[in-house]
Image (cartoon, rainbow, N blue to C red; front, side, top):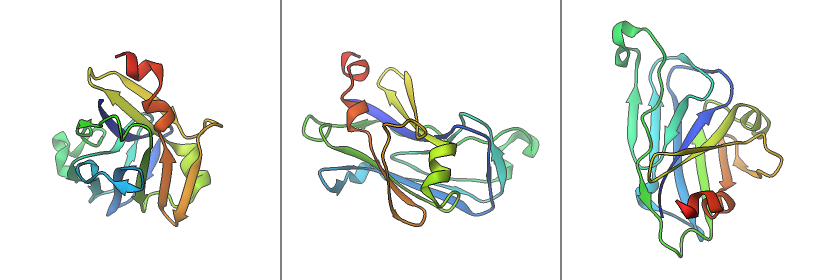
Length: 158
């Protein structure tokens, strides 16, 4: 199964100077190495609702100069597509670490996961959903199971 996973904002979110998000996928207790991604924001800005702030499989750094004349909104680049085999899709977790938001209550209110299929169709999963479990390993580090969504009929049929 070919897919990409991104972290997005549900509400406008202020991102401070030198903020970062590191994101990866874990299957059966092991990090999938090619899924490691990081986004570093050198300058502060406000991410609008539904803005992508991180994606798997690549590393990017952003600053004010990345915008035309330093104006407009800033959004992270899309996540890289990753091929998951049959053995990996029955146990998939997103792990992310950030200094933008540090506690699970705020994460639940402000963020969500976006799964993008091989045709570019995005499925947004807000963390505010009652069926989403957020595991809080330490301050700023979170683990979320996406197994149910990766194996859903919507993604498998496509």
